[in-house]
Length: 245
Image (cartoon, rainbow, N blue to C red; front, side, top):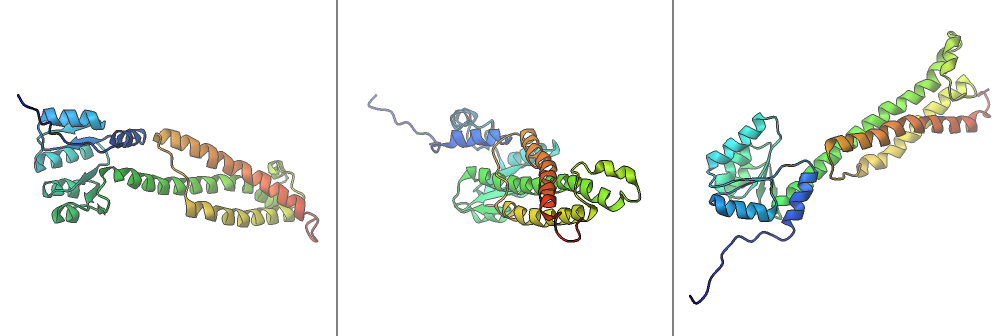
């Protein structure tokens, strides 16, 4: 024997780390290939994917995606070949590579100009950031209303129903200052939330339960505490204005 030539698919540098990041985001990765099972297993182990499907025909790819969807899962598919087109069309999110065939580009929902299969991470991050931002603002808004009711309800109805004065836990100076303080705080908090809405709540790769707990703590509890402090401080400033006593 004079020598040996070793031929193999080369896994891009950093792919294992990217798949690990997907796993932390709660995404299960499956490599689908037309190669034989031995080659597929070797590449899957080297890349760090969760599972693989070898010697896959277009029908096999389509059946796998349908099976996952029937199990209640949201499925994203990346591909570049004509044989990927049916699966790209069936997937909830189909990402075709820019270097792929016209059939793949037509079947997908979007085209990755960089032709990087792990671009799904950016897609998921943007989508989750939008959902988290909307949820955080909604949570803060609902929690924010709780404190305002402790200011406005006693101010409006305590004269008719004296028992409601027990809700005035902030001990605001007068009904007039209580209502004005709540209105001013509401105007200020809307302005303060505009940069957050434009920038978005930062997304960190984590489980859904951990993200929910964090946002409830920050924007739920924060949405309750901030108005009590803000309305009281405003009341201390405006109680000396004419007509506020």
